[in-house]
Image 1 (cartoon, rainbow, N blue to C red):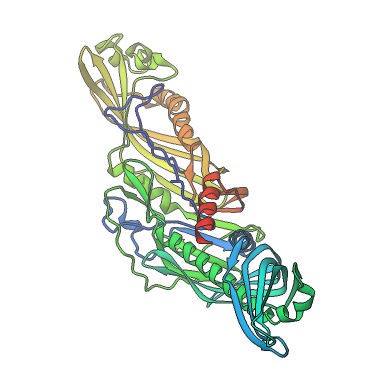
Image 2: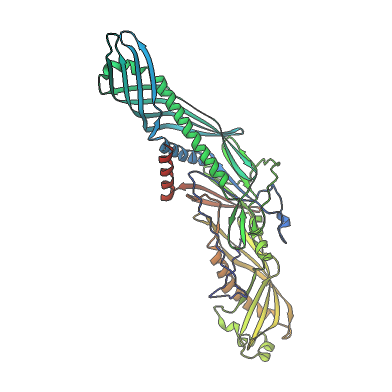
Length: 528
């Protein structure tokens, strides 16, 4: 189990020897109308990072399954419909010579799509891109018509006008998208976009429309082309906006004042016949570390997704190196040092409470207040195996006696703590709880004689159980945010543990915020 290393001043259990800011793992709110994001590493990591270094190795992987792609496709179709409804097409003008009437000038204006329906749609990923096909598309249009002509009898101009309803049926729309990793960002390209209209019917109202239905029918081809061009153009604009959004995703997500997650994509996007996969390095980095441009020459062949339920929409795999990189970062930043001056059994922080455990301590410092000065001697090591997650922590516990304004170290005990726990999902966070499996201890040095460790062991057990575990679990309950785009929420998630990895397999739901809707409405009103 991974302990999120957050070490602020504690009001109940600990007091820091220096001022340290609270660490909170918050995903920045990112607005979008569709999907995706994640992470990589700086090449200048300090102690503890060398074992994780690789420009191309990914430690967090995301796989969007066919069901997940269908979900995203449905969102995109819904967005496309909302952007096309109320779309106004250019005017259509036409002049022709008709026997007995002469030259007739005709105009169709205020052509507006007011309703659109998609009977069925499919998304098909493949090695050369992602194909989205919508069939059975129908749309209804309203428009105004006008014609005028001069008769051969005399200089008399005849004109008429009215309105019309147009129904387009059997339309097919096809988009072919390319998705690549370009210098650590996702690059979405519209490779092809086409549409075709199968049938159009026009019904005129107003004036002597029944006389000129045949004339207006001559506009069918023009109207069909106008609808095809308008929808194709609108979809192209939508893909362009989505591409711009993907390129604008941050490559570094702040975690706190000291650390960030490098969210640069690594390796190729993995396109198969039923899924789209992404891979990121996923390690923690210091806030001041620079981000290198990754070497993208390595082609990823397989993502280590291990979900047993193939119907889930999304799978996210985190390697234990992600947690160990955080452990090393905070250790190197010297944040794993605490001074404990408050515990549930406060008598243990007075030499009188140790009278029969370390007699010389009480004899030398009778009824003196004490602190426990704890420093980790190395970064905690997280190990994940089948059905079990655990951590090993090595620490030195120094017993300090307080005498007036002086702090006197009197003994130091080395601890080796082994803990295991459960991993769960809370919202979009990976959370957990741990329990103590075992611990070992040895005397490092003492100024109060030779300590009887078998007497001290129950005290240490009590301190670990009543102080350290509740503190760790309080922070573990906040969790580690998973790389989920703002607006999407995991649903019915399950956790699968395997050798060195944690996999989260889940469905997703999407809830568009009011601000997202407002932005979309403003855009649609400006683009019409």
